[in-house]
Image (cartoon, rainbow, N blue to C red; front, top):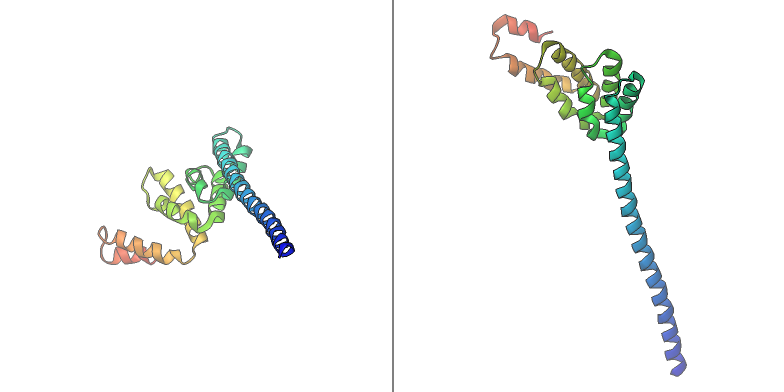
Length: 168
């Protein structure tokens, strides 16, 4: 009985050592994973801030590069890219392309820009660029936009004038 008890104690001792090592290893992996995720989030926010600052740069190449790189920051970059839509074509083209690359997560904010009113030139450029992005992201969205424009136009127009405009 003595040898059997000693063997059992030895097995339990070895198992507890192995289990303690596994638990500590798992805890270490969890903590380091959380730390790495936090560091990555901090680095992404820092890079996003630097890219947005680059949009204000006087250097056209830096501005275009910043607008192109913002696509990799997803929906967090949408407000900065939307403000770029009324720039001159080389810049607005990059912003449009980045917004299309971001995809459906940009759609609600882009649609708001499309419907927003403002000074005529800025409004036309903004709306045209916003429409391009919306239709690139969601080609079926044109039906939704047409339906909403019909309800917007109804109170202001009547008869054949309205049907001519809506058929365009």
